[in-house]
Image 1 (tube, rainbow, N blue to C red):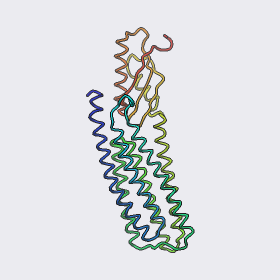
Image 2 (spheres, rainbow, N blue to C red):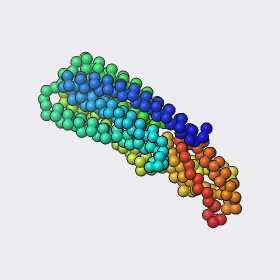
Image 3 (spheres, rainbow, N blue to C red):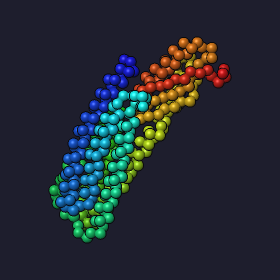
Image 4 (cartoon, one colour):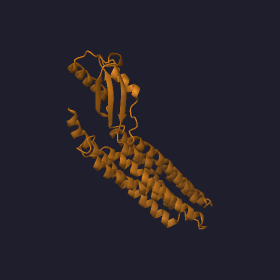
Length: 299
């Protein structure tokens, strides 16, 4: 199948699958956030309220992801000759913004609780609801991360990392509730602070990955590309190897050396063989530009 046909069939199908995954995850996250916030405000537990806001940012990031994914579906045009895939990366970066907002809200709630002597009300229902939401979150993480690897979507993987932090946050909340039940109410706001630290760490990881893509950080190891190029008979060497883009949508440039006395037709044919070999070995490469030149000793 030609490259154009492959772009026209596989990319829309992939986008539709990613969208379906995000919509399913969004519904689960809304249910979890609603349950946690209702419980938190009913009992006065700042750790539960903090975890509820964390889950609410999961839902907001799902919505951002759907918007970014829709934008990234547009085919290349005159203004965006490389396509619109970085809109998906920008959407993953939007998750970072919501994580920062969650950290600020949790910090505010924790400081307020430190100054309030009234302990939260903890019952067996509190533990039952939090355990149920924990089970849902674990299922969502496994489902979304698995689909992210299958579809090679940095958006789904980033969102799964976000939801994974919610799993650990919920475990921390359960520990805080147990401490309050045992007569140590101060551990409730401390649990909120611990959640804030956990979310801050997750936001750093997402920011690191998205900025790497947007700043055109190298994606594929240069030595692996050189090895694939040099395996083609007739190639004398290569240099100026560059890769950029998301790890599942890579653009590659390379200067490949051919004998100086080669006919242009033969060198051009051989360059296409090099390109095909590279795209076969690295399926994440969507386009490769091969610059033909003689080796330095023959220039």
